[in-house]
Amino acid sequence: MEYEFRHDPITGQARALFSLEQQMIGPWLEVEVGTNNEMLSALLVSIDNVGHDQKHEVTITGKEYSVIFTEDDVYVQPNTNFNGEDDLPESLAMQDLHLDSQSVSACGLDDFRQILLSWAKFTNN
Image (tube, rainbow, N blue to C red; front, side, top):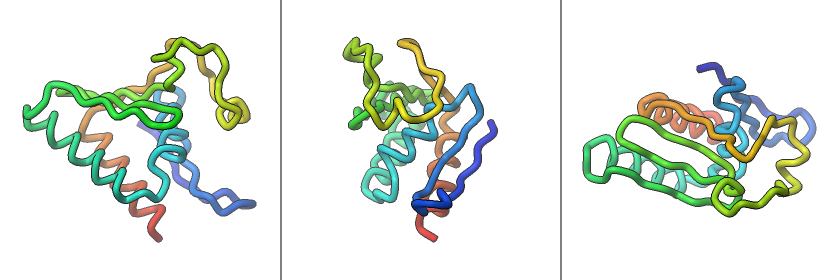
């Protein structure tokens, strides 16, 4: 999986850029996680819960995206997949994302944990 974290040269905001297969993870990190340590902790607990067979599936629904943890994988998708909306929020429409109503990004639990920890380190510097 290829990704890169960088700061926007104009706003200074943290940006997450991912390869096409995982492109939803980048804006999800920016919008739903950002620098929110409580959200980061909740996500890591969810990984532990499904990774240790305490729960079969955990879904966390955010403002614009939802993340679904299963025993092996993590799926990130826009909430429009849940509610049938055709229009994207303006903040997403401005980004160069290749979205359709079936857009979902997936990766393994261990990879996702590493992404979260790397994002936390990047945004807290």
